[in-house]
Length: 97
Image 1 (cartoon, rainbow, N blue to C red):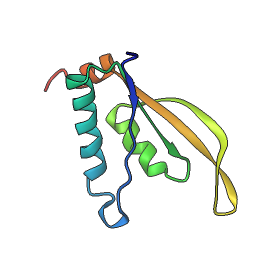
Image 2 (cartoon, one colour):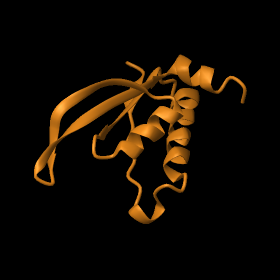
Image 3 (spheres, rainbow, N blue to C red):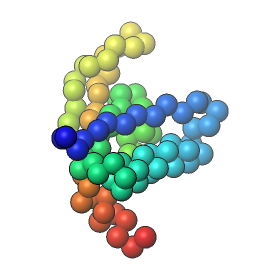
Image 4 (cartoon, helix red, strand yellow):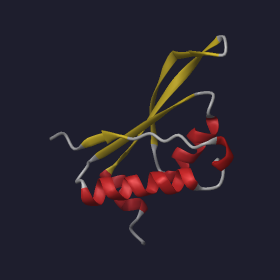
């Protein structure tokens, strides 16, 4: 087992910016690192969604890189941004809890 996984979320427009995304991701991180024995959890977002990038960074994810001109939508190319969190980063983030 490689002890890694990727996650993704999609929040309906009416429920965005209400904390549900962060809550869902924190649940997945807790389950993945505490119960599933994962070492690494990754996720990504398309560059039109800068708000998602700010949330992921606030939660402790680290930027790993950009796939340039990766996604075509609305008559233009968008980058895909890849991020991850490692088990020791998650443990350090939750040390006081």
